[in-house]
Length: 49
Image (cartoon, rainbow, N blue to C red; front, side, top):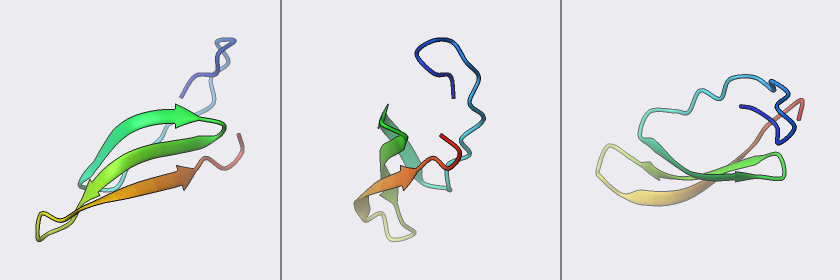
């Protein structure tokens, strides 16, 4: 991940079945699909932001 000013923040390694939609305010928003193909909205906080 890279900050708006170009500073390297680190690498986000999403869990299996996660599709990234957006990042904002130290959070990552996406959709997770489980083993039964059920989709759920997921938000992860980026630590060390």
